[in-house]
Amino acid sequence: MADIAEIEGLIRTALPGSEVSVEDMAGGDHLYAHVRAPQFTGLPLIEQHRLVNGAVDHLLGPGRPIHALKIKTEATQ
Image (tube, rainbow, N blue to C red; front, side, top):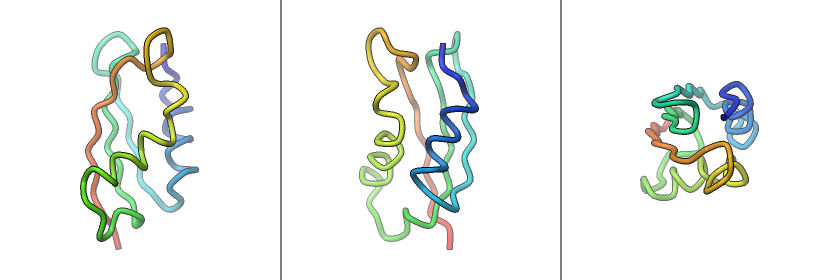
C-alpha cells in the first residue's frame, strides 16, 4: 500500500514550487496524481508525465507500492 503523503512529498521535491494532490483510486495501489508546476511550461504532455513518473519510479511496478498511477498535469506561471 502506497503512502500518499510520501508520494506527494517526492513529487514536490522533484518539482519545486509545484502543487500536488494524490488520491487513492482503489485499494491503496491505484493512485491519481494532479500536479501543477512551473516546470511544465512549454513541455509536451508526455514530458510532463515523465517528470512526475521519475519522482516515484522506484515505487511503481509489480510487487511495489504503486501498481497504477493516473496523472493530470498543468503548467503554472
